[in-house]
Amino acid sequence: MKYIDEYRDGRLAKDIARQIAALADPARSYHFMEFCGGHTHAISRYGLEDLLPANVRMIHGPGCPVCVLPIGRIDAAIALAMRPEITLCTYGDLMRVPGSNGSSLLKAKAAGADIRMVYSTLDALRIAEAELEREVVFFAIGFETTTPPTALALKAAIAKGLGNFSIFCNHVLTPAAIQNILESPDVRKLGTIKIDGFVGPAHVSTVIGTEPYEFFAGEFQKPVVVAGFEPLDVIQAILMLVRQVNDGRHEVENQYIRAVTALGNEKAQAEVANFFELRESFEWRGLGEVPYGALRLRPQYVAYDAEKRFSMVTPTAKDNPACECGAILRGVKKPADCKLFGTVCTPDTPMGSCMVSSEGACAAHWTYGRFREKARQVDVGRAVA
Amino acid sequence: MAKVTLDGVSKIVSTALIDDVRPGDYLVLHVGYALAKIDPEEAERTLALIREAAAMGDAA
Image (spheres, rainbow over the protein chains, first blue to last red):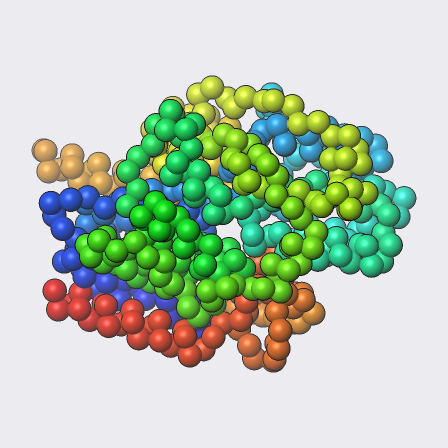
């Protein structure tokens, strides 16, 4: 397809990788975090890490919406869905996210709860319109990309006078999370690693623009390069980051100029601002409480806020103690460092959220990366023999 | 609303978040909504920069 295929040219990717190797200073190492799960997936799928010199390393960040959702929110959604009057609508990748005690939305559905997978908020709205006797709740998750669609669904529900539609809001914000990775005392206590720069998200940035990254590029002196999701986009962004580090620059650069502007999609931002406001604090899996890192409905829309409407409580719930999702989401550990990885935890039976979504670091490593590692071990074995 | 094709798969998506959509435009889609339009000139410029960097790598 146009605008996709030409950004997947492996020959060009190898040449750019050679240029990165030529520019990377052998006396130092470069650690770049790709914040967004879409990039994590692309890096694994196209084996980009194998093209990079040994001293340029990618750290997989927490930008995978289902991965950062704390177990307590899943438990709360399951408890709500078990109520007989409720129809819970959700994006597909939430269905298998493990809650407490081996529960999930999929298992709750099998047990009789009315849980429906939707592609878009418009589908949830259609269900509410068609089944006026049901209380239809949309389980809203995601970053700045999925928030405008939630806002538009709410706007349409209000315009249509749909009294049986509400939203369980779990929308989170990218800049707050990046800042948290760099400065939170929690992260400092739990351990963190050196980050020399960020590959900024593609779709999120179409909405928010490049401007929101200026603050921490300046404040924390870290370069940010917003990049598209195709392999050539990512590798070009890595080259731009290496150049910035070498020059001692810490600027916000935009590799994804074909879709991202400095100010972003102002229409989408206005819709979000109409319906949502900042939460003072919200728990992120792996990052702990992130101040101003999430959104809730504005008080005037309380009737559409499922948390208020159904007096939902979010229980405190603990991850499986052996699960390393928390450390993996902060880039401190790699999927293969986890005892559960590939043993009891696979995409078919995920124990942690990083194994659920294709954007999760563990699922990406399971699907693509582990074969690479095996090939490398065989090579090393041969060399020893 | 607009009808789009994703490499042969047709879908109806919302264009409520963007302006001036015309037949033949390429859109960035997310959960059934168009978030942005692909700018053909900038796309060409990015490819030119990629080819330039690759040529330097090829020579390196």
